[in-house]
Picture 1 (cartoon, rainbow over the protein chains, first blue to last red):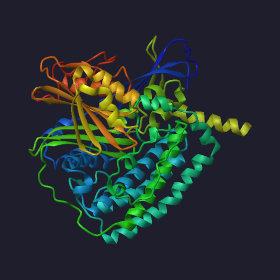
Picture 2 (cartoon, chains in turn blue, orange; picture 1 turned 90 degrees about the vertical axis):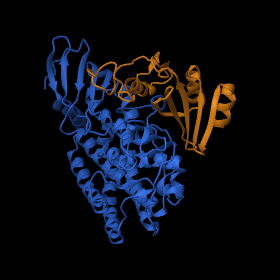
Picture 3 (tube, rainbow over the protein chains, first blue to last red; picture 1 turned 135 degrees about the vertical axis):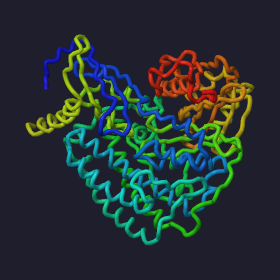
Length: 407
Length: 142
């Protein structure tokens, strides 16, 4: 790689918009002076599908199918938030949905959190050059997806949520296999947690990178692990309990850190996974017999808002009904909508080698390594390409390692 | 801090309507000229978190709901503002108060065509650059 850049003028580092590894393309333009990122322009909308407009033409039971496909990773959060919005209109999940369905909803929701965080962990490992972490995280993700297939018939897009309950039951004979998978997951999660907390190279690499201060987190209204890593005490599961949480039956804790850097965000997600295993175990233990569907027929006129704690944070849906079988308005706000915008302050002030890591740290529903080019603004010559930027990110880790060995 | 009481006390007669659809869902409306001061009260003074804003076309024009979350109690305060102008709907932007509102208002602008006065960066967010200027996807006529 060419290190002869004469950085006396601003250089734009475009990251985007398409890359085979991503789920959702975005385009980041990093304005760089020397090694430092001084500003960032974020251009989104490459994958806008007009789902809100589509939903205005669908009837209430068709909508979960559409909103499930907003995101392939947090595929249960959107339909869950949607049915909660309609159930809010009807009087609230607690009054509408049978108890067994509440537990199963939480089991699905927490399994999703585990597989989503493992996916992110693998990507983060890859970015800092720990490809073994990448392989192991995704290896341990496979049994979780197998469980989804067992329960719902599909590894992603589970089609489990409907207004008034869930569509499919968990068979009694499947529960032991589910428990066994969770038992086998725990040692791996403990290994990841140990690796992050004890490995000096990982600590040196992640600490202080991509910091979002508490004040910035409030000004940018971020949600989820991005917020909790910066000391914002919020989690929809505790603030506005839903599913098994509203029965008060689950013993768990909100995970909080103060540092606001990538290290904190990583730790929050790993501990959340361990908590999710715990939560699912409690649900399986307390799962009562009974119906799974309230068989809701008509939606009266009104308004409703539903929200869940998706792996990335608060996912909120708003529904307005006029008594017909289609909504007048369906507003959807995914958590990444708030979190990605905060890259404006999190990535600025950092170095190019931290850029991919910082952008990935909010866990935007995709891998943010795009086809990157570093272009000299003055003569439009391409200096670096996309793979170089990831390599820069990984090389910094090596430099830290070497520095430690030289002692 | 008593959020409901403080809102009612500080806004007084500016509150046109107040409805508690449930213990966690509070909808209240003010005139559109009061939106900036009301949002400042909710965000800066009361420390509520801005969750999102949803715009909608109505028979009389447009309506925007600004959803603020009081996380400690799990309550949502949805501020409703009516814009009864079908030709040139506009309202004061709240983005100058906090940056998180920037994308939210941009989205409402490009989808519904409501102009946000004072918005520092009102340009396309989700629609393609060559999308026609006068077509607003979430309007019924489109």
